[in-house]
Image 1: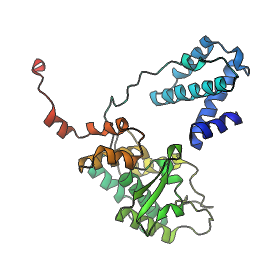
Image 2 (image 1 turned 135 degrees about the horizontal axis):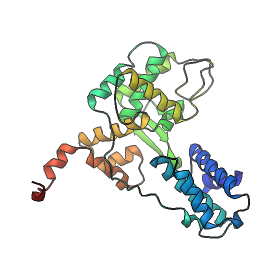
Image 3 (image 1 turned 90 degrees about the horizontal axis):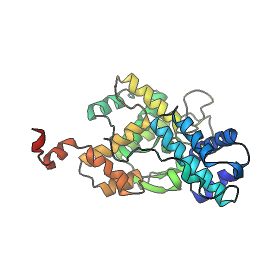
Image 4 (image 1 turned 90 degrees about the vertical axis):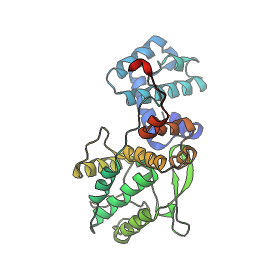
Length: 288
């Protein structure tokens, strides 16, 4: 399993959370089918996938498909199983861009920021985190891994390295920079970590991953009385993209800020402006 993790990091540019997820699914496959991949049969692999998928949500099934195919390709490349076994893992029928992005309304965003008002350390930290998510569309993991050296105060920019070690510099809005500076002014000094954001309970360690950031956002949304179909940090990423679109930012630039690999991913947000879509929609007499 250690070699599989090295292969993921070296050849796929996978992040630590992704490597952990893929290794976990690979371990479950080995536990179910045995330690000799050369003896694995396509029908057994397919049955394992279908059994796991029947107990998972759509998002988890998609990740399971990707992780199992990656593991089987690794085994084939290293000569530990027959070639082509990755193709027996069924594709999951979930069409990209088929649904509308889920985001918060401007009034909800204002309420979320308002519940972070206050001079105590926790409120200052929460405000800085929320503004980073909703203004720059960062992922929860980006915020958890943000280091002090990533903030370039002289140039007013922020260095972010997210999925696949794809590093970019983003402009740091004034209100976001002010919020971070206010938090750093009272940030616990007993922790030697260079992570920007620390937990508020001693010994004030940094967040291990994005799950802690997402849980924090969920609590803030509950405190603000925000009822939304999706709770967590990722809804703020969708919100940031939608707001940029409404302010006339081209899709190409939105994609750069969000660090999308392809324009098709960013194009999903073009459907968020329903008012604009109504203006260009063609009449459909048959439904009248």
